[in-house]
Image 1 (cartoon, rainbow, N blue to C red):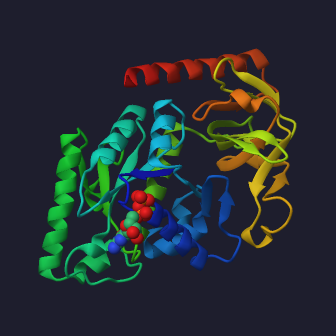
Image 2 (cartoon, rainbow, N blue to C red):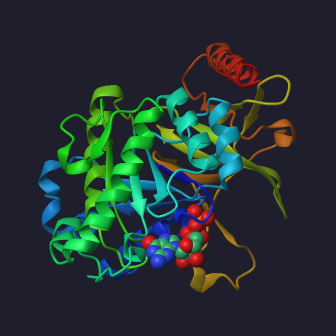
Amino acid sequence: MAVLGHVDHGKTSLLDKIRGSAVIEGEAGAITQHIGATAVPLDIISSIAGDLVDPDDFDLPGLLFIDTPGHHSFTTLRSRGGALADIAILVVDVNDGFQPQTLEALDILKRSQTPFIVAANKIDTVPGWDPNEDAPINDTYESQSERVRQRLDESLYEIIGNLSDEGFSADLYWRVQNFQRNVGVVPVSAMTGEGVPDLLTVMMGLSQRYMKEEMEIDVSGPGVGTVLEVKEEKGFGKTVDIVLYDGTIKEDDTIVVGGQNDPIVTEVRALLQPRPLAEIRTESRFENVDEVGAAAGIKVAAPELGDAMAGAPVRVVRDRDLDDVIEEVQAELASIAVDTAEEG
Ligand code: GDP
């Protein structure tokens, strides 16, 4: 899952809020910091969401939030066709409304057919707002004055109208019956946490449904992922930060990575995760792991990665036919090229 939207509308704050609440709710160590992503387990989400989520209703392990590497890189990744996120949160400032990057983001979501919800952020800045820390939206809405509610309603309906102008049928999330046909709008505040329980609940519901119907994550098969960044790393040479969204990746696995020219066939030398902050003073910022399963963010060190490309596919070969895998990566790269050309 990724968070996108216009600059300053609150993407970072919202991620921080979710992470922060998760840290408070859980024991230390429950939240796993991945390369470029944060995993929040289901039991933590359900304790933030309170009565809104019953963990028995879900068989997902939790949510993996991709730390959006800046709007522009997201756009590039997305338009290159990388399956960067299964679902997305589009953040819109309730007072500022639709802005150029909001439209850009919508266009990407439309073209990639990524299911998304809209977080109508900064509700606490509606004049006269009476904040209720971390409350579900319904509770805090009920406790506002008539005038404040009216102001919020007006802003929300403007956002719904804007979405409709862009061809999305949208409504306040509690009125949406079918999230595949309609876009749900969730009023939130990244500052006070109001509406965050609702946002997490809708996200869980959406991932659950989408994953059940669209893809069975195969957690034991050969890994499939997307390159987020190509980076020089001291002691490792060129490495790639990837999001693994299916299967596993292991040390010594042969992998195929999309490159500037031909697909790169290479072997995993090391899988690297950031070290916990407390240990950061030790010799390396990273620690080695033998194996990682989806969904995860991980740094991969391997020879020959100089030509690797952000947004390109990564596939583990393992017991599959190497030529088949190369062909798949080539096909994916070709579709990326078409997408980029269409973009003009
Ligand atoms: P980004 O550029 O989309 O990542 O936006 P940031 O998360 O950096 O937020 C931009 C500014 O808006 C910062 O000064 C935040 O403190 C502020 N901000 C974000 N969310 C909220 C909110 O819900 N309420 C209020 N009052 N301020 C917010």
